[in-house]
Image 1 (tube, rainbow, N blue to C red):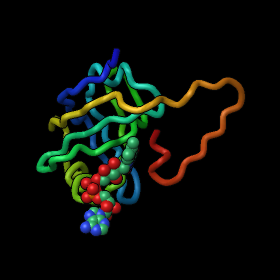
Image 2: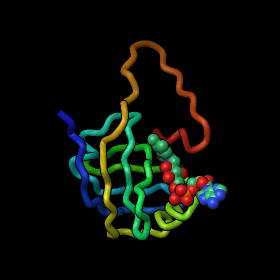
Image 3: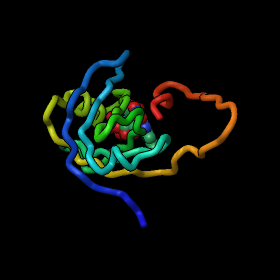
Image 4: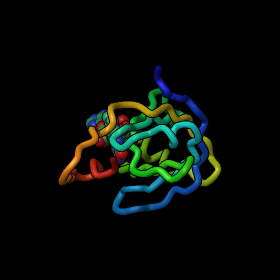
Length: 115
Ligand SMILES: Cc1cc2nc3c(=O)[nH]c(=O)nc-3n(C[C@H](O)[C@H](O)[C@H](O)COP(=O)(O)OP(=O)(O)OC[C@H]3O[C@@H](n4cnc5c(N)ncnc54)[C@H](O)[C@@H]3O)c2cc1C
């Protein structure tokens, strides 16, 4: 059975985290508690028909952290979102990273570091 949810999340924080990159924290109950490393969410954006996918970079209780690089119109709109604004979030989606024992090596490029 899928534990996927489609909820209205609340923006808790949205700050610049680097060049053209923002760190967005969302109150995301039901999704945050069930998401695993490597999974992503689909975010509904005001004025945009299609949702945009973003990997979850961190979880703290019922909050999720996203690292978002501003590349086009949708991410530009997301970067202007402020505390207490609402966003539609669908997730958890995708396959989590496999659990492996022993030594682990992490390799990522650019915003691919998020998950
Ligand atoms: C599973 C998954 C996880 C992801 N996780 C993350 C993440 O954690 N963080 C993150 O920052 N991103 C992530 N992405 C990428 C992110 O979803 C996209 O960067 C985002 O959807 C772009 O939306 P946008 O509306 O800003 O850009 P769009 O407007 O959709 O544009 C996308 C790209 O196309 C270019 N483009 C647009 N229109 C044109 C045109 N007419 N001619 C030429 N080029 C054009 C833009 O410059 C841009 O580079 C992920 C993607 C996937 C599939």
